Image (cartoon, rainbow, N blue to C red):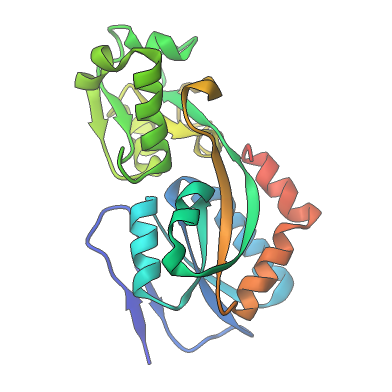
Length: 241
């Protein structure tokens, strides 16, 4: 039997399920801002175990909706505070990945010495992920409010769904700067002008974790055990986690 995850919302990957070609397989859904390290983690785990981790990505509102629609999603990765509120998903275990950091990326040809310089006139278009559901969209909104910059910058904001979309817009020059996480900024270093970190006091901390749904699938348990290895920690640290 073939089962498909479908979504008309931008930012959610389309995945088809068919008869397993691996020893075992399950599905992981994660916030799009952590796609780069999770793809690498999944590939390393698959190589070691022979199992398969299918993956879907979006902002956390989309991710949770997908998980509620399908029991085949055994792992959900994202902001711990968001996962803890989703009690209906029945997480049996929470495995830490690291602490997420909000940064402001800027396009090539511009320079941003500190976050407050975003108010300068050359930053005419500023990308921000979904401010209601995306972790770094909410963090960006908190920074703007707590720094007192909202009144100056709100009219310049270009809302999109996810962190990778903001990163793509910065890389292409469609926006002058954008709110993303350090993980995506590190991965896109060659395509953007650079990035500056936002003071962690100006937004709520984002503890990034993977939740394992009950009853725990064998592959999900194996992946969580892999997250505790030196190989996994090396990958996560390389992406700023």
